[in-house]
Each structure stands twice: as structure tokens, then as C-alpha cells.
Image 1: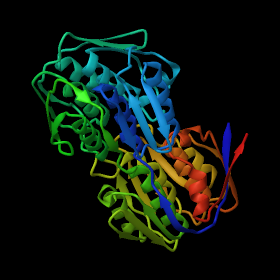
Image 2: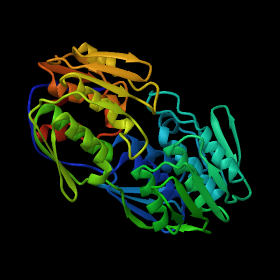
Image 3: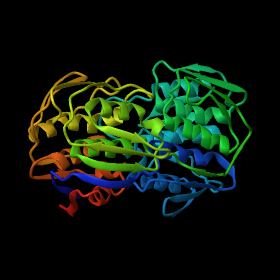
Length: 418
């Protein structure tokens, strides 16, 4: 077990390169299973634990996987096992994408129910609704989702709630269904678009990704391809927030600025300066920011995955801020950790009321989940004195080399074994 030791109070200067999008990559890798011919070569894959976990799962199914730096080659023509029942499957939320991928290609699958970060109830009822609408028989026995059918038939599916996971999972299965499938009230996040673009590169016929109506005309087969994953919107937002919180000037490279507009707008509202270039964003700040109100929403609204890092900077902002977490009901577990550092926050259900204080002070805190871990790192960077962040295995799931990237910007941060 490792921990991060942070001596706060350093301004950040320089540039940081953003890796591939975690939320896209964890869906694109299972999607590669659907290629019945040739191999998939996928570039810009982030070096994070979730990806390593997914690679192990796919190898357990019989895929051949080769990684060279940020490029992964997947040969799924050798896949023989349709039962995903390892501990890795049960520990990883995104393993549910195996259901849609295997169902699409083989018309059956057995996948253990997934785990992931403890940020609230995250049922897969909309996934099941979509699979059943396509003609699959779905049952859950002893913690395993079992899906099978003789044929998948395209149909119209209306999601009761906007769900990124369900949108992608049902899209995977529908890609190899007979006829046309229309997904209504679909999620519009950039990683939904990225998965659709990947499938189209393999030979799928998907239109409308990025809108709330996606039309999928089924094809007979998919083949391997070369593809590059989009930059990680959430990693980029985290470093932007850190720059605004710590003060200084940081350029965040390898990004799509349009994907960051909701984050940029809030930072500008707080008093930071945000300069957009073609594929980078520069954040300048003198550390003096003012409170703002935030409501998390599906894209293009403010991302729930950035809410926790943003709550940290608001702890030392001037005035009162209110965060309304409309996506997940348990995404304020990190607040108790921030309080150990002197934050003044009151949580009422899905609303956090934050009164800015003059400073945070170092303490021993833990990462309660992935994005909460990033929030505690930022808290340590702005706090007076030394902060120890434990349970950083959560952080490693989604932020590649976080201590090295911050160190290169001038932070006093190091990793130690406990």
C-alpha cells in the first residue's frame, strides 16, 4: 500500500500532458472483442490500473493483448471463453461493457456483476431493458448476469434516465443486431461519441452519437482497425482546477477545449484566467478566487467526475458556494476528509454548502474513491503544512503518474510505501 506525502503552498508553473480518456478507453477495449477478423491497434490508452485490470479480464477470455507504451494491440479472433467471472470483473464497474460486446458478437454472455467506486447505487436496469428490447433473455443468478438469444433484432429503445453506461452497452449489442435500432434519451458525453467512432472504424453504421437520439443500422460483422482514444476530459479538468487553486500558470496539453467548456466557464466565474488554444488550455491564477454555485449535469453540463476536485478549491474561495450533485447520491464522502483540514462544509442530502475559509491545514486523510482522491491531492497542494493521502489505489485507477505530473509543475509531492 502506498501513500502520497504533500507539502503544500507551492504555486504551479509549466505544462502537463493529458492521457487518453479513461471513460472512453474502458469501453473501447471491450468493444474490440467484437472484431471477428484482424486485430485492433488502439493508441493513447492511459496507463492506469483500471486499464490493466480490463486487459487481464480480456486475456482470461482468450484475447491476445500486447502493450507498447500507450498503444495496445488486441487480437480477439482467439477469444473462446464467454464467462467473465474473475475477481477483476467483480472489482471493476466498467466490466459490464463485456455484456454488450459478447452479446453482440456471440449472442450470449455470462458476466459477474461489477463493483467500482462507492459513490451510490448504480443499477444496470437500463442496460437490461435495452438488451431485452433487442430480443435477449436476461437473468441474474448468484451474482452473475446471464444473457443469451438466437438473434438480436433492432428496435426503438427509450432510456428512462440518461445513462452513459446503458447508452454504450446497448449500442455495442445493437451494432451487430438485425435491422435498425434507435436509442432515445441517449447520453451525449464525449466518450459515447468516441466509442461510436471506434465502432464505425471497425465497420459499424452508427449515426447521431453526441445527440440524444442515436441510430444504429446493424451490420453482419466488425473487423479490426487502428484508432486513437480522445484526451481525458476529467484528468484535464483536475489539473485546471489545481492550477486555479494553487496559483501560477499551467498549460494543459493534448485536450479538446470544447469538452472542457463547462469547467472553464466556472473557473473564469471564480476569477481565474483561462486561455484556449487549438489543443491546449492555459490557466492563470493568483490563488484569490470567489465562491460559485454548481449543479452537476449530463454533458454538456458540469461533469459529476469533476465535482469533488472543484469542491476543494471552493473550500478556500471567498464567500459561500453551493454544490448540487444531481447525478450520484453519495458523492460527498470526501467532505469529512476536507473537514479534517479545516474546511467549513455542511451537507444536506445531495447539496453541499461551502463557506470559504482562509486556509486549509495539512492532515492525514484518505481517498474515499477515485475522484475524491484527486480532490484530496489538490487539498494537500493548497494546505499549510504536510498532508498524507492514503488509499491512493483509488487514484491510480484513473490518474496516470499523478505525483510525477504535479512534481514537474513544481509541487512538493512524493509517493511512499506504507
